Length: 246
Image (tube, rainbow, N blue to C red; front, side, top):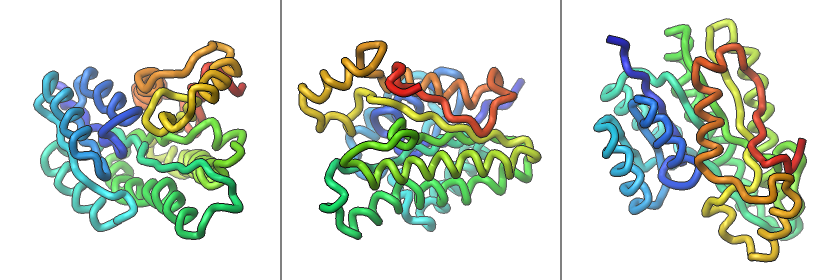
């Protein structure tokens, strides 16, 4: 009998992360997800996954804390075996003028979106290299591709994720490890709930498909990049944005 694979997702309690965790569980994966603060959402997601597979673990982890990441990964690996697929989804944002941005706010966004990515990949990658097998999917944003007014910090961090993805794919390809990225557009998540109706309507009008995307549509793209059906794809950025940018 083929061994079931293990997928670890950061930022997995809600939105894109929760949809991704559920998508991998549906495909038969053992699922571990990290979350930072929302215990209620984490328990809801854990229970939803538990209903289709007993193999789900949720850890309250701030990805900025390397020791906490290493400890949780160690426990997850002891329970479910080595991580076959890593989805680095944890991220934060803030909409404000750059001139209003404080150094502490800049550091919070960078430490989470880039520092957290470093911490989880740096912890999990050695095992993938030793096994000569693994898939890493990062989550950027279309603003990391084209930039966005009033989101300089966020856009910068998401652009860095793309550079990280492309560089690491070159480095670990000879070890049979693929590294790809999804760059979502405007998706119906809590992060975009701050947008007023007028802004949401304008974004829909600017999107060729004339609507906002769903977390499940992004999760499907992430799963595709981690699945064997994309076995000759690495170092790529897959836009999931309804044609907003091409």
